[in-house]
Amino acid sequence: MKNIIAVILLASLVTSCQSTSSERSTDVATLCSNDNWNELGKKMALAGKSVRTFNTYKDECADRLPATAKETYLTGFRVGLKEFCTYENGYKSAEQGKQNNKFCPLELRTAFDHGYKKGAKDLQDNKDEARRLADQAEQRKMAARPNPLKG
Image 1 (cartoon, rainbow, N blue to C red):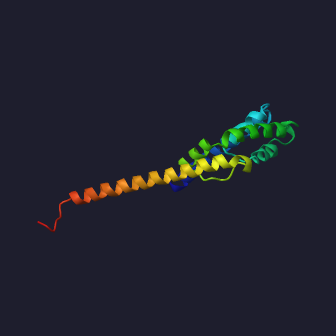
Image 2: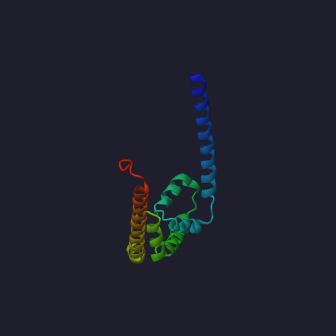
Image 3: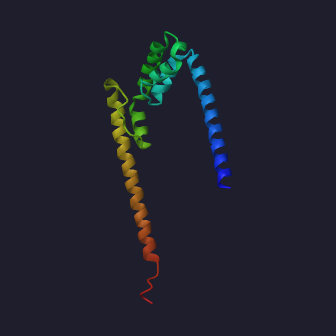
């Protein structure tokens, strides 16, 4: 019985790897034929990805990469950076508990970092308040319990 289960698990694992592999090759083929590298660069910046993400595309596309892809990608990436590196996005990143990975370049980092510091402080204040309220609720619950020693 154990052997049958092992064979079934192994077969499903191999099948899932094959479908992932074929999906990935389809994604790479679509990506390499992508004519909108500018939009892809912007999208990566807005997602907080490193500019070096392009190197992954370059490696995967190899000969299929258009000659203008890198410069077009970088142009879009710069636009995305300007939209991403704002006070509001810094605040949201901290509020969501994300780490400040210093993604923004120095000339754009100030506003993002200020927002991040404020968001991190507000997040910590909210956690402290939630902890305080939970402690109070626990104390009230303990106080409401009858004491078995005072019979």
